[in-house]
Image (cartoon, rainbow, N blue to C red; front, side, top):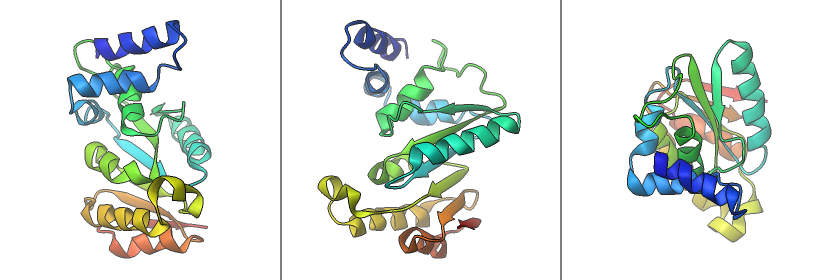
Length: 189
């Protein structure tokens, strides 16, 4: 954790970037299970938000609601929505001992890249997974929308019964995920 934080500080100092992703990248190289280790310490778990458009806005709304409910909310608000960004967001809140600072009364709200969602769900074991939409904007990165939808369907089938799915009822691709869920499903319009 110290190495990851040092790499982030050095990156910012040398003006090589914002230093958000490098923290997680270094930490994951040194301790591949860092995300699972740190996320397990959050008293109220994690909420994952994914979709082609609207992740940052939705995450912000959720964070505000949870803060108003009295929880400490940790986010990857810099938009680093790959696993190294999630790792970085957790590592910067950790002590050198490997324990999160003030993990009690804490919950994380992470915006997650569409194709990374299955890996993130496996590592974070979310309390809730929010699927906003899936559009063709990502063709240059992931191929057809159907390939990402197939990843999501496979992931949803493997989620525990304790994970609540929150689905956009107006987007047929995301709404159809509810048919595969083992746990509670909420549809939002």
